[in-house]
Image (cartoon, rainbow, N blue to C red; front, side, top):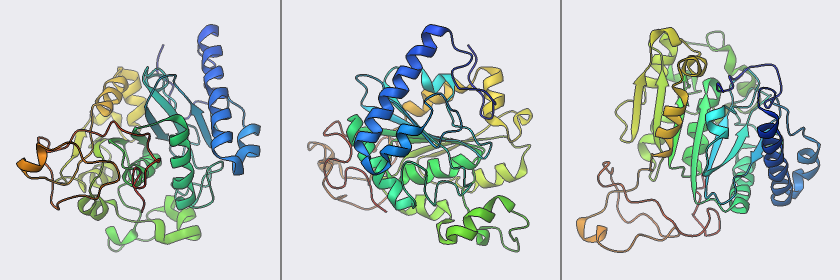
Length: 321
């Protein structure tokens, strides 16, 4: 069965066989119960959501026995990012988010909170309720920015960003105005200071997720936005066929390549502060410990991910801005 393409105007389970459809809806209903229990302030909103609505703002699909979670962010097409290769992951909970306000999930999300900070707090509670120890994020187009930004704040292991903006700050492109970037209008009217440049944030923050940025060179803006992140340790850039244009996910879906990148995402582990050989022989640092040294870690120096308590239980287990 082909992956669901963002923007398809029909229910997310419409093309599934009946048995798979019933199993999927049962998963989402279980997720709805977990979400309204973990987030009682939003119980009414969560309860009223249609579990088969691809235009919902929040969807939680738990996977029994999983200790990892994939958080996806849809683009401005207005649909959740719920491709088949993501729904079928056998060892990951799936949390899908979209922002109908078109503020890149920086000014709140229905069911999570009315600010970025409130959404982070809700996601930490939800991840704790799911027993998550490893977080991954993925986003397409406008959803690529929150995937990278939330991934950094939540200390994700890895981020997959496709045709993604890496800055929402007009100063990153001198001489431009909102007329050149009309998709920033809603954000700038609501909370302009949230439109930060991700390059300095990723350069100066450890631990940080490893990131895989996909783009097609035929789209000059996507290429420029992705290449800005080049040279940051832990960030990989990959050019796709020029035919992909901005619609990278649709192109990958048509060529059967999306599952490959989802699996590559699962293999990523986040960058940690560099440590000395003597320190490396000691037991892993607890989730509550502070980084013991500054500097960049190479792939060989990256410490193994923690396998301890679920994320969010101990202070510092999920990063705070």
